[in-house]
Amino acid sequence: MSDFSYLNIQKAYENIKHTLDKTPLITNDYINQLLDAKVYFKLENLQKTGSFKLRGATNKISQLSKEHKLRGLVAYSSGNHAQAVAYASLQENISAKIIMPNNAPKIKIENTKKYKAEVILYDPQKEIREEIGKEIEKKENRILIKPYDDYDIIAGQGTAGYEISRDLANLSITPDIYLCCCGGGGLIAGTSTYLKYKYPNIKSFAVEPYGFEDTKISLINKKIISNKPGFSSICDAIITPQPGQLTFPINLKTLSGGIVVEDNEVKNSIKILAEHLKIIVEPGGAVAATAALTNKINLKNKTVVVMISGGNIDLDRFSSL
Image (cartoon, rainbow, N blue to C red):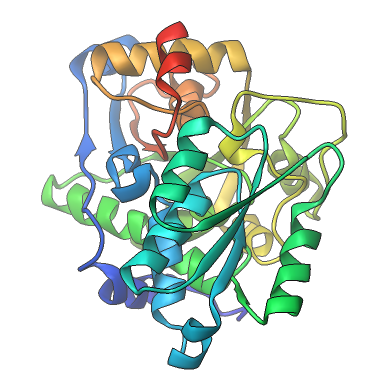
């Protein structure tokens, strides 16, 4: 589907709007004064299951045939896609097996189990989740729900951009810059596609943790380049080996570049967001806000949209920050 466009996202929105929470777009006087800009935060941490991932999972699963649903589903995820697939499966009484790393945040594992999915833990140091997923898909004849490299998933995630544009239209505001976290690239591919359609002059940037800036490097080189091994980050939700085969060509068209943030900067941003926006944000969900709060890009006198993509963080870790 090289002709992926805003139309896919509008169709997805009509398909899933009744099952989603429409998350707010908010601004904050303290942060606006701090950055000398007008900043609007899209709070996907308040979405059902605590992240934007429910949009894509619901859009994908709702389109499966009855026969496919009876076969059951399998998915792999560090946590947010896991919860989304488990929740969406539970709503339709579909059997789901979810492959998760054994070092995933406890809250993500527990919530996935709470939504009645069978959780299979693996060792990310020794095992490859895609291989485990393919094996279960083949052996048990289940349908594999990928976390980002699927046009139905990308369109579903793009519905967050559709909501942003409607809220901005109600305020008669035209944004200059869009900052969004990026792992495999599904959320930013979908949302930037819709925002670019509505606002042709908008500059969209992928924000990634240090050591995992594969999208930034790939955009510079105009081809997919993998991350080098040996790095780690607290931003578990957006750590992927390389950009997606389907997401990257979209992002190459819609994005103006990439921005890199450090873990210590993300920790400080989580604290600022808690103090001033009164919200709980997980590290991967806070990277776009971190890019803004640390002036990685000139925002002076600009209107900026910042994606807060998730809030699934263990409370003991949140307290320690």
